[in-house]
Length: 145
Image 1 (cartoon, rainbow, N blue to C red):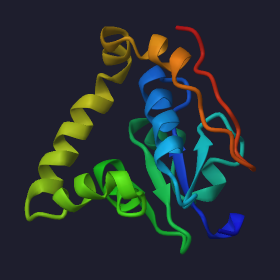
Image 2 (image 1 turned 90 degrees about the horizontal axis):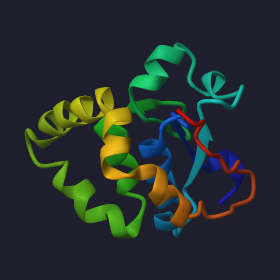
Image 3 (image 1 turned 45 degrees about the horizontal axis):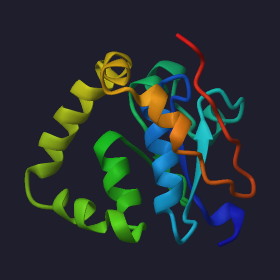
Image 4 (image 1 turned 135 degrees about the vertical axis):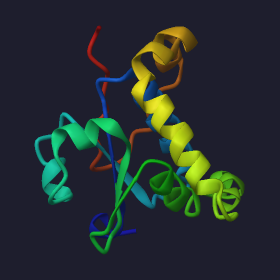
């Protein structure tokens, strides 16, 4: 898939939990439909006009190839439909009412992600799960906190 035809996933690369999840996502992306763009990338906010740094830090965002921006659980549902191993979860999110519950849970996790990163040991997990190296994608390491 051509580089310009890939969906862009914008995420907080200063969060160990976010980085761990994105590293897993690189391994699930068998069809190479997405490109990760860390928040520290200067071009990150240019990809989603109207998105602020504060808004970016609240949730994962997916910039579709047509320029539409999805956030949180809706972004995960969208990108999940394009990754074979993630399709069952994404399909579940299409059941009536499930996306609202998923957004609420996502918001709770997002607000507490730095604490959850320490509790679940995401920093250590990042050490054993390398990011899959792909052309045009930066490998990131969260800042020490």
